[in-house]
Length: 306
Image (cartoon, rainbow, N blue to C red; front, top):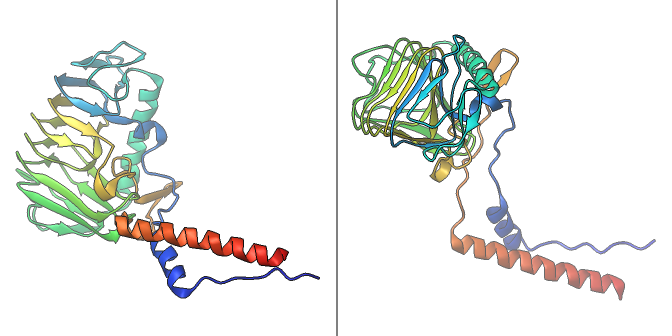
């Protein structure tokens, strides 16, 4: 019986490979937003109105049980999905896909509500806060954000925030929601019991799931999220929206991760290390280590054959 020679990497080389090749553990889960719903960056239930020019990364849709399915400011055709130069996807006016997405939106809102009140914030205005992942209840007020709100994932790629808005969601002009120290599995959800209004030139983040209407005032942006109205209209005014996120949130599909839905049970995904792109020097070290590994393997195989 011939024993196959074994070889071991030097400890320093093994460490180099581990440093360079470790990848984040982003859990596989059933997402809160169904595939049909996640296709839409903008979804209304009565009308969608746009003051051009808005820039939308993803689909725009409307579906109403009354059959109006009105879209203004985008190219549309009843019952069809058509293209529009302002939209990176398609415009759905009363299509079957939009109808299913509306049904799934109601389910998603109910699932978020099942998580309960979590931590109730003492003031309706979240300005100046830095919040860890979790569930937060925010009461209605004249504004819910008059400046900067920071959401700190703590290095968790699957960090998730759920905001249970007891009434309206209102942000002031030039307010900012910043998400950091999170990764490709992260999620941010605003479960709004009434209507949402995002202030002019504000910078928002995450998925707005409103029972009634969503209004984005002039220049408001949500480049990493969606605006979804369950029973009312969506009004846009020269806005920018999309689910293609930047930095450490690349791959989070508009911050639609962080939660797992099994039947009617919603749970937070387990923590996983947020991915940091290796520095060029680290990548070069990995390349050298792999080359050395190949040379060592060939040497051992030659010795086994001699």
